[in-house]
Image 1: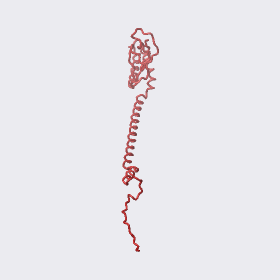
Image 2 (image 1 turned 90 degrees about the horizontal axis):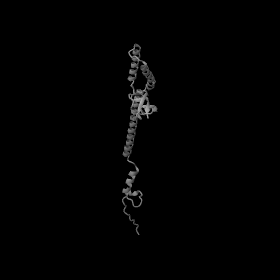
Image 3 (image 1 turned 90 degrees about the vertical axis):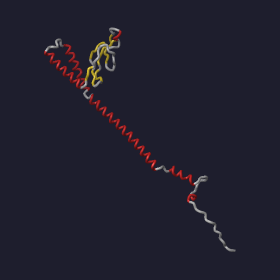
Image 4 (image 1 turned 135 degrees about the vertical axis):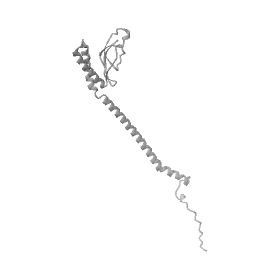
Length: 187
């Protein structure tokens, strides 16, 4: 007997088949899973860039709003910086008006000096945008401009709810009420 060894032909080796695969899957199905498991670096950078841009736009808008609000507050503060001082000066204006009513003869030399001082004081108030509220009797009562100190029976039906008398003038500073007009209202 001869020893003969029969060599079986070698099968070609495939690297794809060398890895263990679950039953029912081919080598082509594993590649997409690998791609899904690892995020695309370009996509990740684009997402981060979009998020950074969004944060920047929001921060810029917030800063712009802050800047506008600060400018508006500063302008209002400048316009009404002297409000307390001007309010206290209104009593002097009232005194001037009472003194004016007490003068009988307006051509008197003594009255002339008084009227010069009064006019100068009025011009200073106008320079700082202080204006007296101008309204006559029989105007509608407006709680935004008037302060009712009392009510009296209306002399006629048309005067109900209207200003009958002005006790103390009201004043505006840059169209903002700094002193309400004290009025008597008909009821």
